[in-house]
Image (cartoon, rainbow, N blue to C red; front, side, top):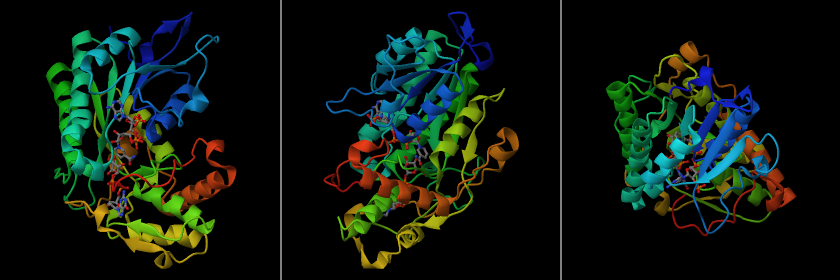
Length: 359
Ligand code: NAP
Ligand code: GDD
């Protein structure tokens, strides 16, 4: 059975393309779900069972399944559980799968290397094997990462030799090569998006951009007076997440599966990000930022700057929002969220930092 995007499943007489998103509760999953719903897709998301609510980024999309014309469905599942993944595939019969679920924090991957390999690396294998065994003809997107480039000098593109420097990067590389192997060995439609850092007001609070923009909002409001940071010399290529999920969708619309780098092409240091964020509210970052070595990584990726020429040429993808504008979007959103109160915004921050030294 091959339900490619052009030959989608039929429900109630109308043609609907059916997507399965793992990691739907994350930053990218939430934006992607919005995008696909706006394109008329039927969207199925895999969520982890947790003792606390983990759906705050997608709560606004929820529709009671007893309503008419429901196109948004949630299923419990975990990338550690291959049996469940395979039964979900057989039940849902997706046309497109966006595999975004991952232990996605690089610093945490040094503390939990085995778990990270299990979830981020083997999780992809489990899903691909499930597709192969059920004989689905669906298209598969793998969320690969610029972290796989590690110490390879910039600019990095699809031809750059990978040199990962973290358990996370190594796990992503395993998943990346597994997706390619299933494409070559079994003729399956698998595509890797090698995405450079992309951020938004929905970014997890322990990634460096959001940690900074939240802190700026809180310092401005007089709620905090210091911000503890690790290596602020690291350089990243930061884009805007909603544009990157649109790129994911474009990657899966190609006739032939391929791998694409998505990036802005410009690098900024964490120090420059700090300057832009504090400047935006008229503060000097040097009065607030302190150094805490527990945020350092045993091996660091010093600089990643992407070259997305191939994506621009072949799928017409180009970012419009660059890092300075991204900083303004994120700082303004955190200021707004703070003013409205935590519960008023889907982009609201979680409780402040009791988390261990992870971000
Ligand atoms: P994120 O916000 O950390 O979201 C990760 C998602 O994976 C969450 O929905 C999380 O569920 C889910 N998840 C974690 N462990 C799972 C498990 N064992 N079983 C099922 N689901 C699990 O990450 P993101 O920023 O949206 O990134 C999406 C994907 O792109 C990730 O694979 C990430 O590694 C990759 N990536 C991200 C970037 C970036 O800059 N954002 C760049 C390159 C690649 P909970 O909500 O329950 O935790
Ligand atoms: N998190 C964090 N917290 N990072 C800090 C801090 C801090 O207090 N101080 C400095 N940094 C530096 C990190 O050492 C790193 O060099 C840089 O800021 C960015 O860190 P993160 O925001 O945690 O992102 P990342 O680049 O390690 O990983 C993200 O991007 C990858 C794409 O290359 C994650 O989203 C990954 O899932 C993604 O694949």
